[in-house]
Each structure stands twice: as structure tokens, then as C-alpha cells.
Image (cartoon, rainbow, N blue to C red; front, side, top):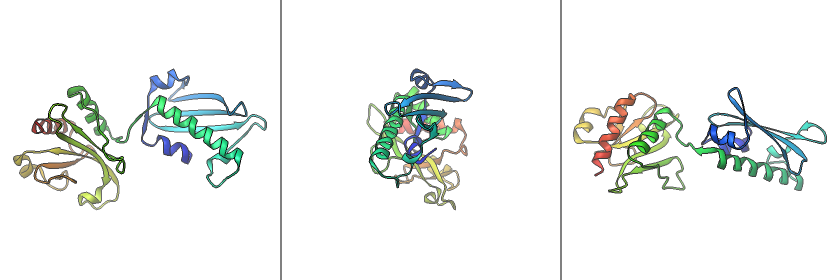
Length: 223
């Protein structure tokens, strides 16, 4: 992907039914749409590979050659700026119409999002504009938080790695605190009261069944 497309779609997840409704044709594992662009001066082909890879090709209809000047921010001039704006607007419209926000892209993050929506009817809340990778769930009746979903460096958990990981914070009982916290799989609550919360890496180190049991406990503790 070019930098413009990457910045728009990196935290998005394309939806098959929305892409088809928008006129994309399914070709194998890809979805392809070709259309005139900027008053027929160009032909724009957009190829989407789920979940969020978007490749574009802009062909100058007069020369039948690829046009790429709009992809380099250092290229200036009224016409290039016009092409760049139209290109950005087109991709943003595609993101709004055919993609859903998908900040947390691990399988276990998706499992929690789907389970919570199904069992409790709660949606992720993004409360902090300065921290778009942080979100919470709260009970609809008590308004108390019962889980936080975040992306942080593993080093912030005391691990010897700068890899960015997706984590979840749950409430825990005193018994769980004494039995589970090992600073390898279960960590003291990141950015939360370490006596009442704990952190789990959503990388499969905790089995799905255990993760969902801990979710249920946390939900109940938020009464």
C-alpha cells in the first residue's frame, strides 16, 4: 500500500457484503473496482484484500501510463494537489462505506468484542482522543468498567521486547490475585489498581475458554 492508503486503512477491517454492495467484484480472494476518476482524466482501480490491504492503480487516460505524482507529498502544484485531494477523498469514502474500525486485530481481541456484544450488549468505548489504541467496556446498568482493551509495548509489562501487543485488563478477586499473577502470563493491572485489576496478553498464551471465564468474573465484579 502507498502511505495514503496505509494511513487510512491500517486500523480498519473490510466487510465483504459492503464491498459487493459498493460495486466491487470478487476475484478469488480479492475485491476489485474500476472507475473513472477526476472527470474522466484517469481510471482508478482499487483492489482490496481482506482484512485491510488496499492497492490502487491510477492510469492517465491520455497517456495510458500510471500516474503516481499524488503519492509523494513533496510533489507540489495545483493539479497534483487536486489529484491528491480527490484520491484521499475517494479512499476515505471507501473506508467509511465498506470498512469497520478494527484497532485491535488479534483473534482473541475479536473474540472478546463479539462475545461481549452478544452476551452483554456492550460496545467498546474510545474515551481518549490522545490514546486511540485504548478503549473500555462498562456495564450498562452500573456504568462500572469491567474490561480495558489496549495496545502497548511489551516492555511496559516488564518483558524484554519493544513489540507492540494487544492486552486486556480485567477485574479480579483477591484469590485470583494471589494465584494468577506471575508476570509472564498474568500481569498486575496496567494503568489500573494492581490489587483489583490484572492484565493479559491477547496472544493465545491464555486459552480462549479461560479468557472468557475471566471476562465473566470481571463483569460480575462490576456490579
